[in-house]
Length: 572
Image: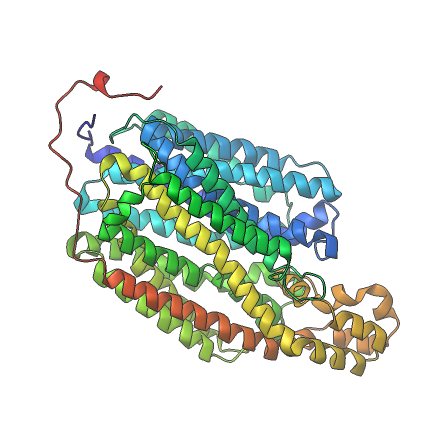
């Protein structure tokens, strides 16, 4: 039985500030490891670029994203059944506990890497609980005419957190890599206590049975697809990527089959976890299609820009390779500024005028920004680059807040948890897929010309032909990861014995700040054109989907039933 939500002017701001802090800390932890990984791997005494260790590297980056993509729908459903604040509070506690266990890592080598991966996955469980229920809590707390503002502020925290994590990781990791995980603990403890004391359920609950078959098939199918994508960008046999690996093909195809079975199950059970009937609502369907395509377009952008800055631009402009991770995060700040400006403003305006003009215009502007980035030379003028980053941030901010508000406004109160979970699942799954697509395009561009350029460049500086041939034959993904981690790529690939065999002048040139950037610029530009063209196409299709969402729509609840609080159904 639904009870009319009880809200007051102070409570809604408490809900906004707490959920914004929760979303911010979760998204900061999505990217905080990217910059900190070199110090973490040095701390546990493991070489992440060794052929047998690339899986450790990928799973530390991707495991957290995969688990948040898989679990948010189930946790949103549990929030609808048992109370959103209860699930949200549990999420803060779980996130904090595993942040402590990550900070307390004492093992080294493969054992230490496996410990970090498992603890990161479990930390992601807490993050999924927070993400799945924060949007629904805000939608419950704010009236329809203010939801755009609330969700705008919340979405800005979520999107900008992924870029703030780069800076936070870059600052803390050189001091002590344990601090990268420890920094979340005081925020988690404070947030847990604050949420427990101040948040309350103001939305309706719905007694229902847990859809076990739906939960299992959804988790198995989506995990299989995302794991297949993760392994698809690793080399296989003599191939630069693993898309022909029978294991990868089996995981992706098998996962799609299981997900098809999941859809069939959801049409037959009395209380499905994934309410397919919600897709009959045009505003919900169009918003989620646009959301998925926008995430697909921007998800891999972060990796592309980091590699561009760390592997090419920053070394060419006087930065040592070891300094590039931190400065890459700092040089990407204009993107976050764009989000911060556009997100709340577009949310406020969408409350009045509806989401369609802002979300559609934002996606068109994002496509334009991607195409303009592709026109830049690899060694660009930073002022132009910063302007285009800010333009892209403005575009994504224009889209994100109104689109989220429109999706949540289209839902009945007792479906907001699962609806928010579905929205987040589409976004996070598309982000993982985007990383796979973007990396594949970059590797495809590199594989065409990099081996020959690398062989010719190394032999010209006295490296024996056999050694040069061996290095030129390495998968391009190793080169990308070396640049991503802030290692000196050529020094890492050659090793001290080969460098000792050439003259000091030759060794200095090979490991200097010009040789590798010049070597990779041409092949990188080929892959970059493919990736940015793909991103622009995704944004344009998202603009069409957003345009078709219809006019402003807010779901109207049936007349509230006056009943005492104790009559609210509580699942057992």
